[in-house]
Length: 267
Image (cartoon, rainbow, N blue to C red; front, top):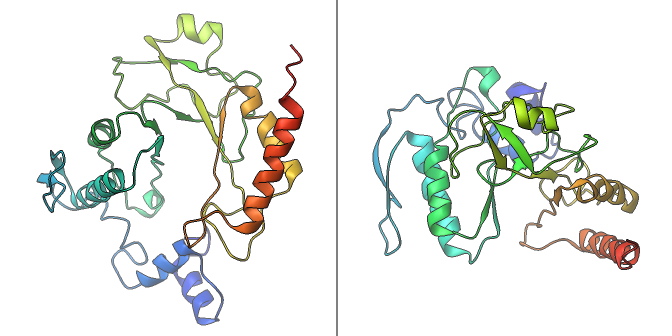
């Protein structure tokens, strides 16, 4: 849903014949559900947790027994399908957003079960938003910190497969200085940052009417992500599952710039 518009605004936009984004279309389709426009997201932990087998349709692969509400059961069955039917994964990206929380619909996630499924079904995959890779603190494809360390301080019990504790505010100016590491932590975790940036400007998902950001914008992202010890992410596929023509051309241009700039080791 577009912030500030709400369901009435999206209905008005639809009725005026304007195009809707994927999220807006889902919200419009759910406009008569309770709570209005939010029916697909979950039910705010309103359903009872109960024992369930994942996958729910059986099969010959590994099986998981979980205690989960409606949303988490649906999510884990979907996750199981994705992880078992589409080849090898290098990374599984878990957002962790809770978009309807301010509207009174607070859905919790079964992160521990999700991590276990990923570890079992795709053991070589890194997990973003969990035990392996952390969010850098913005969605601009860069880090604003002068120093972006891979080792960060953590509080509580060390759990190599658990959700990292973002106690130190990934949006802060200092999360892993010597002082933080030596005096303000119970243990240290290897938890490097990933910079999620958008190849198509304001869009996360591909949009036929949008153009890729400029080469200069990508250069700035690269210098302030990879150039500062982060990974740079996001080139969304189109509705045929491929990177679109303009996006492919810009990525090739970007790759050419990286090679021409860094092929010679000046050190």
